[in-house]
Image 1 (cartoon, rainbow, N blue to C red):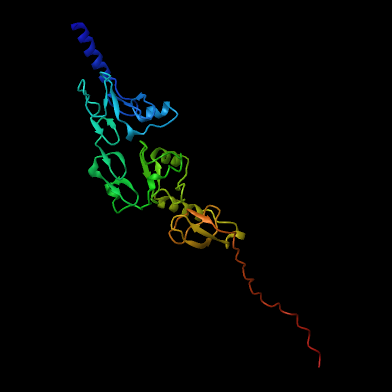
Image 2 (cartoon, helix red, strand yellow; image 1 turned 30 degrees about the vertical axis):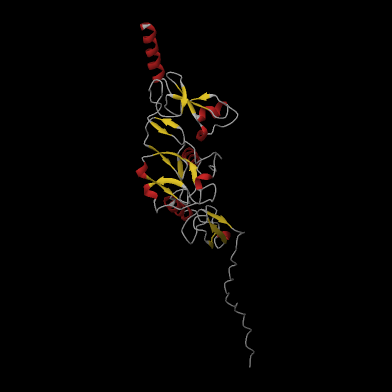
Length: 279
């Protein structure tokens, strides 16, 4: 009996140290309300099954230490092991403490701490406190999929990159986009970060690369993707600069407008004078 008890406690300690999955640290399995199977988390379930688990409908969990199936709660009713340092009884999220908090308007748990974030009612998203009154609102912006990978942003465990235009991308997708040399929002074509240094460099390159004589007076109509100004500017093969904000993030709107040079007035040729008649 004593040997069995020791074996049980060794097994309990071993299982308690080998808990969770690649997504979460926890000491329980969720009983999927859809198929009745037990998985460490909804993401593990979704990767194996042909359907998705609704985390909000989870009613039961199985202890990873004593295998007791019980109502979802933070502590095992049988062996008193703590399933997760953090537990949300709405999302049924068990995990180690990361200063998480449940945002009621978002409808999910966020990694905090709560006091460093606020919920923007128009964007319908939790944002860092330094963005309060300092960001461009886009209604329900996180409810749109990432325009790069077309995957969900709102409930994604991947952080989001907020662009100056207000649109969101997965942080990893944004980093990949930068690596390819792309600098515009895939949705609205606004510059994805401050490009002033790049535009100054473009000014120098254009100054050092004059157009051929036949194009030096040519102009073109453009639309600026950054300030939406419509203007007519000098044509250059390297880029056309917005006269409103100085951006080169512009789109040509029509063909070249060639200025016809006025012909220079020529002096009248002097006619040879005929000799005067002799008197």
